[in-house]
Length: 247
Image 1 (tube, one colour):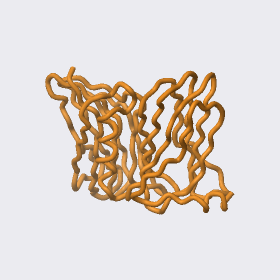
Image 2: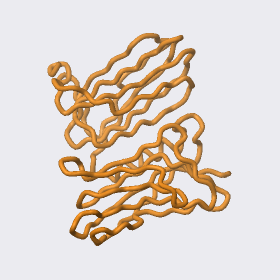
Image 3: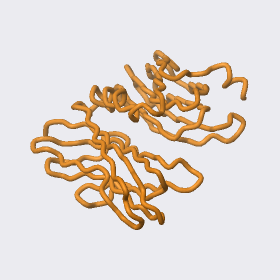
Image 4: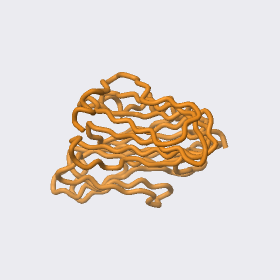
């Protein structure tokens, strides 16, 4: 298994076609490894489909150990789909299973440096063009920081109010800090997603909302808050990604 992965290395800042099939039915499996500190974004473009295609992305830090499923989704419509991933290990298995008919598709990947602005430009360019077939609009990202948050304190890191005449589809939130913490995404004060960073894991993380995302309408307040439950003060930062369009 290790030799199979070693023959195919995806390098940082490179774009590569992983698979391209025409009128295909069956199971299409791709295996590869990525350079250290690379952050992948996968692009699945379906140009024709008469059945369904299931995409499963699995990941591991060791090709001889069990792989963890990072992403799974079934597609039944023509479209261009973006799958950004964070907190990944080096080894990947990607399985595309087409059943009930045929599909024509291309699966590509771009690997960016993990430190490059949370891959904001590549990601927003794709979702603004067409993320899931019905998300045409303007890609947006909102970034801010919360510094010197006291122990036991809960503060808003990023806050955005949807403008009059607009709607916002929240597709993703990324967050990090100099210590572990609780993070909540809220719309009009209601918690819609929550994650915690913890000892022994990465102190950064993300929340991803598949399909059309979380919808917020004009006047809605979208915010990401952090709770610092450690005994020391902490610094935190976060970014919210979405697509904004006219109502």
